[in-house]
Image (cartoon, rainbow, N blue to C red; front, top):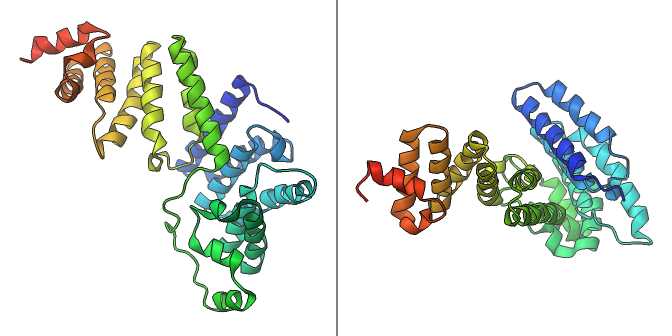
Length: 305
């Protein structure tokens, strides 16, 4: 098992982030070249590398985003070929790769091949592996031959956006939880820069678009808190604004508002500092300011509270 060190993981996620930065700036050719360079640094099978699942997920996400899913197929076929051999004698972690391979064939409208991989996925993970997938996938896996032939004759490809409600894979969830746990442990020890690194890694696990994931609020709030505690106020504000936008869509988070106000204060933006601090005070009261009274003193200087 090739286990990346913390430094190697950080470099890996930085490179993956750069792929999406290039893609979003419409430099798809450079983004693809970097993606393939990163992939080439990770030996096959990806099952035996601690970032292998993320690498394959990134390949799928990139080619899906750019409308070139057929280019993702060889990477998944190589992995699933290995996994099919390993299954004969041992358990495998990457069972979701069979589902993804089937999803690629489904998108390419090769339903017979999609059925092959959906059936393997079902054998390994039963219905739970299909829980957040398009309902066609499970039907294709379980349908009788006659029903499947009828399905093919009447097949209409899924429209973009039909995969709403997607969730993280078990591997992604475990990785994110592990990084957050390590980040919280570093916060308890007051190792704030180290904590920020762990939370940044957890955030990198979330597929694009990140704002669609429930974990975005918690992770960006935690990352902003760690950066603030490390004295990196501008970086903290950037993350806390993301968290605040996420929470405000439903219910404002007093702690995020507090940290935002404090970061703005430290950056010399008193107008914004007062706005966020007052909103935090209105939601939670003076007890929210117990750890550092200077921000409450500043607020009281400008508002009759």
